[in-house]
Amino acid sequence: MRSSPQDIDQRVASPTPSLLIPRPEQGEWPGLADPPDSPLRAKVAEVLFRSAVRSLPLRVEFPDGTVLGAGDVTDPLMRLVRPRAFFHRLGADAKIGFGEAYLVGDWTSKRPADLLTVFAQRLTRLIPRRLQHLRRFVERAHPIEERNTLRGARQNIHRHYDLSNELFEIFLDETTTYSSALFDDSAADPTAPSAAADPMSGLRAAQLRKIDAILDRAGVGPDTTLLEIGTGWGALAVRAAQRGAEVTSLTLSAEQQRAAQTRIAGAGVADRVRVLLQDYREADGGFDAVVSVEMIEAVGERYWPDYFRAVDRLLRPGGRFGLQSILMPHDRMLAARNSYGWVHKYVFPGGLIPSMQAIEENLRSHTSLRIREALFFGADYAETLHRWRERFLARWSEVAELGFDPTFRRMWEFYLAYSEAGFRSGHLDVAQFTIVKPE
Image 1 (cartoon, rainbow, N blue to C red):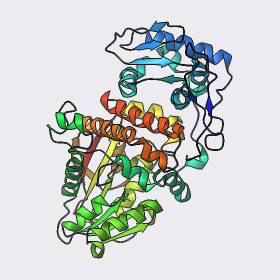
Image 2 (image 1 turned 135 degrees about the vertical axis):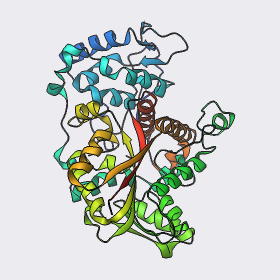
Image 3 (image 1 turned 120 degrees about the horizontal axis):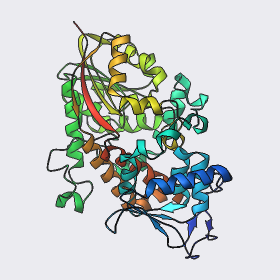
Image 4 (image 1 turned 180 degrees about the horizontal axis):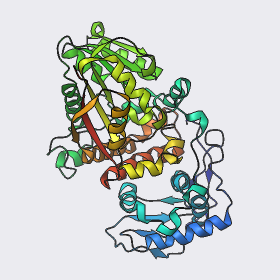
C-alpha cells in the first residue's frame, strides 16, 4: 500500500472545481479510482440512503447545497462531493462501497468518528426490515484464499502486521501495544486537559495496566512457564519476564518477531523469552499459563475449535488462560460471519469478531476450559482508538516519508474512526476473561 506520489484528478462535479480529489494510483489500488456502473442498484441505494438519513442526528450536504438529516450545526456533517460515484459504489456493495467512497474522496467529513457513530447506533434499522432478507443476494462471500489455513493465516497476518514496524511506532505509545488500553477513571476522560493537549498522555500507563491485568488473570509470577499466542511487539513478553516468568511467544509476523526480539534484548530479559515464528496449531509442550490478547479475532470462525483445543492441549491441569477479545452481540455475529466487508478487504482479511456466546460454546464443546470471570471495558477501546487516530493524523508527514500515499492515509483514518464508532455505539465491546483448566 505504498506508492510514489499519486496523480491528482481535478475533474470534480462540484460547485468548487478547484477542490483536489486524490486519484489512487492504479498499481497500488487497482480498480479503486473508477466507481462501478450499476444504475438500478445505485438508484435503489440513493432512495434508501435518503430515507435513512432524514431522521438521523446528522447533516448530509450535496454539491447543489441540498442538506438532508435531522441534525443541527452541532451534529456531524457529511459532504457528498461526488454523489453519483457514491451511490454507484453503495449500490454495488454497501458494506465495501461506503468505505471505498471515503478512500477516494466521494464523501468526506471533519468528524468521521462522530458521523459513523450515528450510523452504527442505528445499524439494524438503516435498511427497512422487509428488505433485509435481500442482503444474501447482494453481499459478497469471503474469498477462499483468505481462509486461515496454516498457509493462509501467515499471508493474512503478513498483509496487516508486516506493513512497517515504523508505521505502528508512529501512532502507538512507547510500548507499541496494538490493543485496547485499560484506563483508570481520570485517564479515560476525553475532556481531561491532559488528553486534549496530548493524545498519548497516560496511554503508556493504561497499556501497562492492561498487560498487568491479563497477566494477573493468568496467574503469571516467578517461575511460571507462559505461552503467549500473538506476540505483538513484545511488551507483554517483557512484562511477564520481569515478573520472573519463562516466556514462549508465538507470532506469524516476521516484522514483529524482529522488533520484539530487539525490545526483549534491550530490556535485559532475552534469557527468559523466546519468540517463535510459529502457528498456535504447531506449538507443543506444557505451560502453567497461556495469554492471548486480541488475536482470536484473526483466527476465523472455522478455526475457533482448533484455537481453543490448542490452548487446552498446551495448558497444564490447574492452569489458567488469560484471553482478551473484542466482542459483538451474538445475533450481529451470526449476520456478519458469512459477509465480506470493507475491513476484511482492506485491513484484516480472514477474521471475525466473536460473541461471548460463541466463546462459551466453543469452550464447552471442544475443551475442558471454563470462564471464571470477565472484565468488560469497551469505552476504554473507544478512547484508545481516538488517541491513535489523533496521533496518526498529527504525524502523517512521518508516515508519508515511509512511502505511504494519501489513499492509505484516508484508509487508515477511516479504519480507526470506523472502529471507534463501533465501540462508542455499543455495537462492539472488549473483555478480559479468566479461563481455567480443571486440576
